[in-house]
Length: 177
Image (cartoon, rainbow, N blue to C red; front, side, top):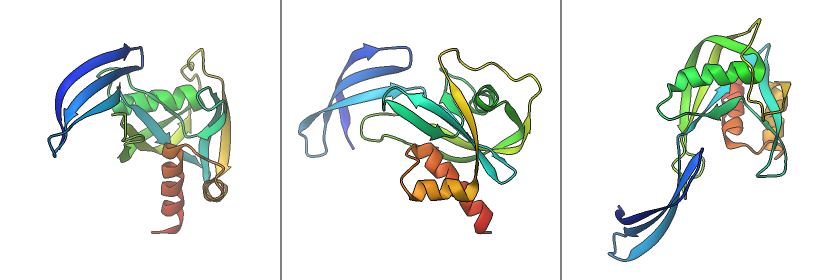
């Protein structure tokens, strides 16, 4: 186990805080760790008529469109399941009767403490007057058959880790009882 010796905030933003820490390693040598602290996120697997509800949106960091399950970041101390239902409704116009936790994902263990709480929407249904999405998000809704989504994962056409896990879950649920 590493022991923190010194910590310095390098950047404090709206979504992340970046630290430069000095740690003592088990061999007693000092090493530097640059760590991104993040409030975490939530992603929702929603299956409607054997199709996974996906969103297509431009991701600036990668300079391209991605296919993803509906998801969003958590505000500090926000209730995860409520955030999940909010994101599902804002991004897709769906809500659900309940949500079941699939897993908590550590997407970038080398330098970030973000946890994505991955849920499955139970009995999703269309909302008559859904919540409005974020003003800086431009989303296309995609209904993709589970088998097609699985093939896109296996053919390296879907890259988002939370989405890959959600698709594999849907595929497993469909074929492995």
